[in-house]
Image 1 (cartoon, rainbow, N blue to C red):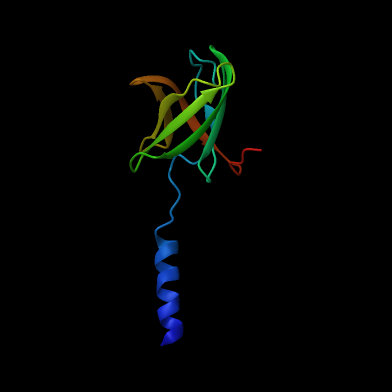
Image 2 (cartoon, one colour):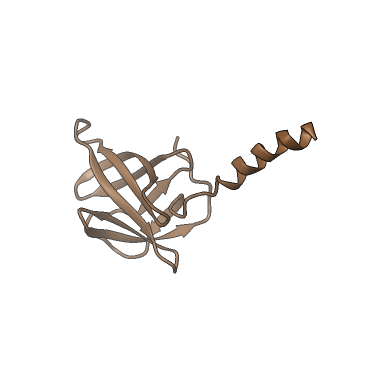
Length: 118
């Protein structure tokens, strides 16, 4: 009985830890105004992407805003004192959309690979 009581909390904790659909490595589905070709949302809550317009490497922390949307709090390498909030939403077809202030910046498709940020 004692072993069963110890097992129940462990099972409940594991059942509540499903990954957010935004976690992964994403590649641009089409050209976008910012020139973002790849976006990585790592499981531990970090994200990263590069843009050509504006030219910057974006380093982010992200968390689930709701079931299908993640909020990314990002700092560009060109101005490390500035923070910008993006949203990344995944639709039913598995297409991700990165947006800023309600305007879509680009559409992305998940690719195989482990989403790691060095």
